[in-house]
Length: 122
Image (cartoon, rainbow, N blue to C red):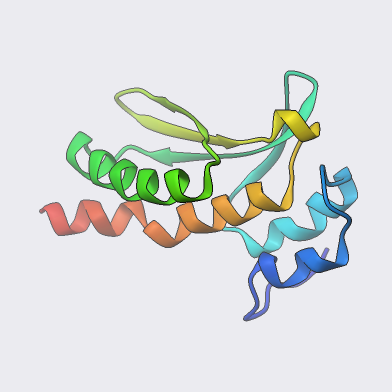
């Protein structure tokens, strides 16, 4: 497995062909993300992260910040929310699985730092 360095996974995506990444390509990029998993959803690879819910107001601020970016990029996640957790899933069904865009979006999710938003709410 690749070691995480100062680069982002975006720096390494040029090594791969456009479209859905092969499983071994996606696995090689996972170390550049913070606690994301590569899963199978509806027969296709997907990126998934589960956040411990830090209160509805922090989650709402996080979702609003994410919404600005997803509207700009025209790429939207599946988000599942309950009282204890928020699950975010990135997958490009039209391309047949996980793409470089999904990794870019997962990195952006990490940059928003839900837990810092919760701390600012205290």
